[in-house]
Image 1 (tube, rainbow, N blue to C red):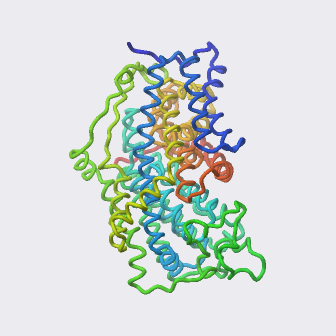
Image 2 (image 1 turned 60 degrees about the vertical axis):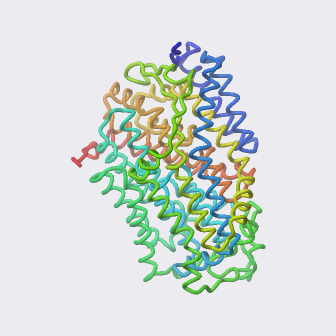
Image 3 (image 1 turned 45 degrees about the vertical axis):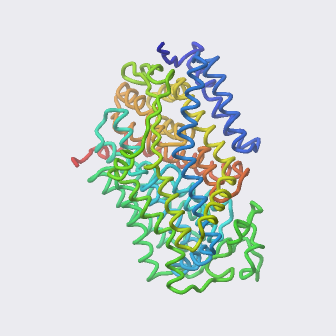
Length: 576
């Protein structure tokens, strides 16, 4: 029996929208205000969503349970699988003493912590977002920043802030490809429009990131390097997205930014070198052991696995030989190569051909019907889970960890023991991620998210701004730019046509607004807290990034407003 979604179950659009927002309110207030552990807040949000879906929106109980289970599946694979294996890789390298050497090698490029942050979190993070996406860049860069001596709060929060500009083109362009599929709009035009909307933000995010770390005065001291990273990334992203497509936009931009920044730093260095957290030290303490350099979070990163320290000389520096440097970088080079290879369509097709069973959620699949105006015509929702274990990015990370362990001299038994410790460490995070995806999929199948979306669509002339913020809400709720595009892409197109706005503009705005919501979604925060082993402190991370997320999201909305009403020439899309 087919069940049709009802977007105004209380016969009041305002009341229906307010009630539909309750699961998100419970989740975010639980983490940010009541300081609940993330898994407790996620379970509370899920329970709220179940009550609203069943009692408020009339969704059959069995369908609601299946929708939640469907979300749990996607939470564990691919997201949970990535988190588990990146922690395994980190532990393998850390327990073999390689992070001290790695820190020293980065210090040879620059011993200024601001530039190390720029290189790792922004440049390398962009590459990993483009190659893998789905939480991998935050997990990888968060772990690396910890190894460089950044505090747990900084490593978590700054890696989240950095992971914004490339998100729309993450995982080899999956969000844009999905957006084109769900809206029926031309892929080349969507890619070009997203590239144009993100150009300004790709340019300023590096400076924003450094300001968040050390304040604008200290950020101005490294402005030339920040400009090199921002300009090289933003221009490359604009060109590739407009004249090639979405597939290699983030990967190519990340590579160009890495090469440009590293090359520039061979010829330039700031007049004043800033070591990690030196602004928090008392006079004369700059060279003291890392353990006394606790940040405001009270958790010095030296507590993480016995490494940490202050990059660039504030802790004992490891003067490694070239062979030792190659050995320290080997796991991350292996990771980079494998993640890139795994992300290629030909690789995914090959691996999926070996093993990718499809699990049909009978009782849910094609039994929930989305209704206008969310879609142009009634549309049945599929509920088929692809168990793509071999082609998942987390598997590439697992293989990188296994190879690295063997090449670093660990015995199979030691590797297995390390994996066991990694699994034990991430159990709370896996529960949180599973609950969050259960919440996201349940609200999607119940029509709860669409009810919130329709409230945004009723804003008339201000819709370019609020439609962009709808994308922000979509990612904050679902944890994925891809999922937000599936959820609201059709609504953006239909609403834009009704208001006389270019559909490509607003569909693209759903994705670009969404990237700024990425840093506050519970899944990303849990990935960050897990990568830095700062369990139970998700509320501090949320408070750290919330302001940045809201302001950047609103700024994207302003840019879209200007493109709609003031700069219409920016809507012209070239033929690719």
